[in-house]
Image: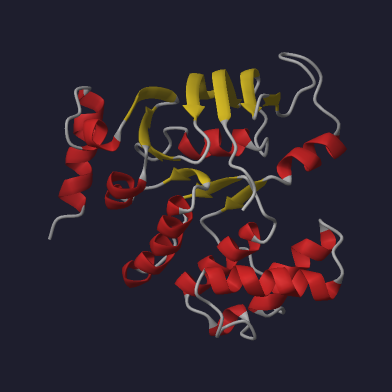
Length: 258
């Protein structure tokens, strides 16, 4: 695995029309560590994640990956050329809520296609890397299956393998288990736990508090576009001081109690 990346976020602001989605967000992501973003729906977590690889354009502030500004040539300056942005994104893997697999391709084909299109690898080398990635996520016996013959959890693991095959230094996960049936959540989280133990830098938007508690090195709580608090999981999840965090966790536990 390539060396892990660091991320520095400074005074980042983002609007969706009149809606102020991110408000002066400051956050440091250390290399080889796992950061979980939690908070109510609409609090800006996914927007922040998308700004990190410039899928959403932030309007002010800075986001730096390994010290290099992403999205702009200089703070507040012109956008960086598309080719340079593509080059930066090559070290960033992203896994979305939806799997976005090509239905006409096998699991192997879905993973190998990006390696051929984006990295320009010959088919044999792309398939070798794709097989290794699928084995890593526990799908060695499903490589010839099309998405329609895979469970939701298996499809999401193919999506993770597709990102891993590009050999990223940073992985972004946007609620990767939210579209899954409850019984399939664990298989995806287990793959993510393995990546964490191997030292992959990961930023995870999640509603899985158990995952955040056991895997995250730090938890960041967001509400209404603001980064309210960042701390170790125990302080945020079990000893919260801010009333907004307490209210969020109380609602979460009420919804998830049986």
